[in-house]
Image (tube, rainbow, N blue to C red; front, side):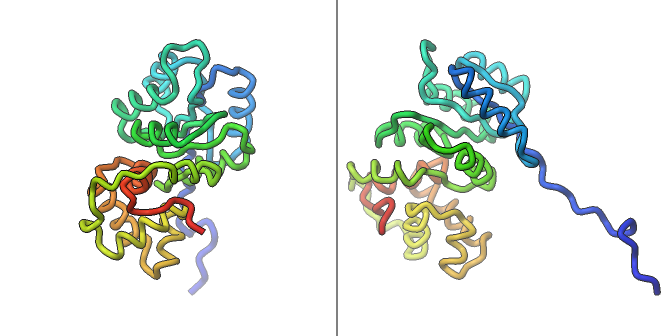
Length: 229
């Protein structure tokens, strides 16, 4: 029997290109990021907005997969956190990454509570931001190492850790170290599917909607120390 030719073999499906909307009141930054996105084979900038109201219209019209928004939208009465809250409420499957030139623990907590899946310093490299976008589309937690220390300043031990299983504690601590699901699975010797099951359980028990919010909640309750060394 002759070996099948390349034309006879089923074509491998290519990963779907992720559609990104950029929200920033600084036109130059938005244009630079848009160009960088369009140079990537798996990412595409579908538009940009300079205000929260414009961003909502663009999301409804363009249906992006990911929104990247600056927390400071200049003279707009609505900041990037409020925009994140409204977008994640009206579009539950939308992923929102928040950028900030000046980040602190309170900003991280507010962004997480609003439904952001990542918080990234605005002064980082374009390459780092592109890596963040690829990670969040896999459902991974993204909190820049420079921001991890901000979560150590407050703890809230009002809830005990008794509800978490030992394995959930293991997963939580590795999430707090910034590892994604694949890295955690390798570290613990479990499948990625099993790891994601533990993450989902943690979200329920910590009353969180994203991995980032779960780590913030756990840190405030004294269940883990973020960025342990």
